[in-house]
Image (cartoon, rainbow, N blue to C red; front, side):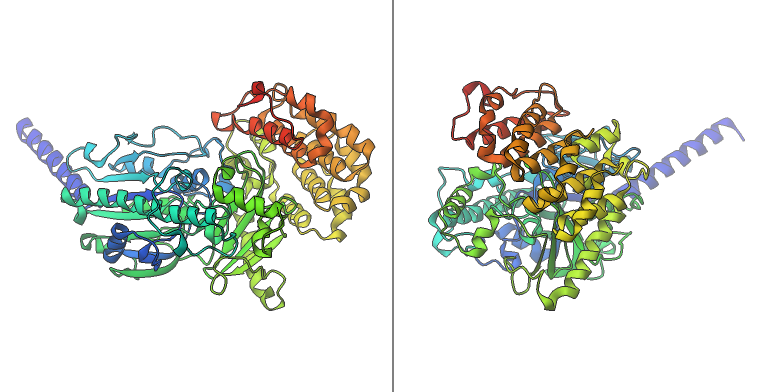
Length: 630
């Protein structure tokens, strides 16, 4: 064939191929996320007549509402980590608020996969991930990020996040109240005071402000003629920013609004129950969002993603349960797992000796928190309101149909044992299937990972034998006194995580546990793992003899020395000193001399130890010196 003819054919073929790819790109939907912060489904389209949300209500009238959506985490960083990865933070070791750990080897954040298919991905602008980014994730992630920056004809995935409904806006003053505090419905768990009513009214005001932001983005989309080419999501990053919702894995902390609009042009990407202005009862979790975005783009989600697409070409089966969690919240440790089937919520408190309302500096900036705690101290709360300031039961069960405020615990109800067992089994199976690494103390977990990701540690059956660790956590947390022999035996196990749960189980049982296991606790003071030593020291300090207290206080102060210990050991020791309260007052001068700066894996951890030092010293009713203030 003549070279000119051959060249023409090659050129024609290249042009034809390019045209095919361009055409394929042209028919792919744009995807727009409009997100807001710290609010539940307190919106008109969800039937809340007190709310003022005309823009999202109008979107819902064109699209579809999802009635059962959980954010997995009741606070922003781990919930956003769930969204971006398509994996449970309890599985990737990123469940703590806040933290930063390596990304699982060989895996990507979902915008990276969209970008590989030709999408322009922009984020305006909050990230706040607890997982380190595995390379370049966004084409642009900044206040300038916008779909208008894409190449001509390029499909886009764009995120716009409103911060106007964030928790800190509830307490911002001055603020001109719009919603009438007198007309607020105060939840059963909150005291009915002017401060609480004011905060709830202001909460509704700022949800309206987030709605206004959503309206501006939607108007711009429509003004540019893109509405018929764009799938739109509106959702919040977790439940209400009010106390006991935010930071707590009840339905009130996890239930979020989700409205999805899919234009007629892309009706083949709609699920079978999609109806404009309709509702879907499908259970949806934030872990499902990443595979759903890929499915909408025509990309089969990778098998390592733990969620399932609920829209697009690769819709998966609807789940029977949604799962939530609570880990460390800033400077305070905890471990809670929850599950719902849409009606009932089951909660397992693996550290029931800790109160719900642990002192977290940021939480106490909200007027509701302060007046609530004051009324507790004065003995002026109802039983439902007072629970927040007391230790937790091992298990909780709530019927959202009859008890939407989740205050009537049915865990001991004879008529609900089958329901509790079904949900409890679902929670246990989920922890084992996803290889929940939260049952290894945070510092020990990173030490075992040896610079790798906690996710990959969790899948190494030699380094993490989850069945025996999880079994001990279950045994320890249920508070059965008959478990003491098994717990004492666990304190000598070759697995440090088993020893930790054995020691913690003894501490949870208070004086009875310590009197039964005093020799084992004294031995544990010399354990190779700091978290075991600290737990044993706290147990002996709280419930042992004066001689025990005299021995453990110097040990705890030494382990709280950030100049010699890592930040995780320092935090654990300071939490234990705080738990001892005035019993640690003899160490006041030593605690005042503790360094308030030290090495951290990331700046996210830098404020926690100073906050704890201040809290410990406040127990002695002596002010923290200026040199020790963060």
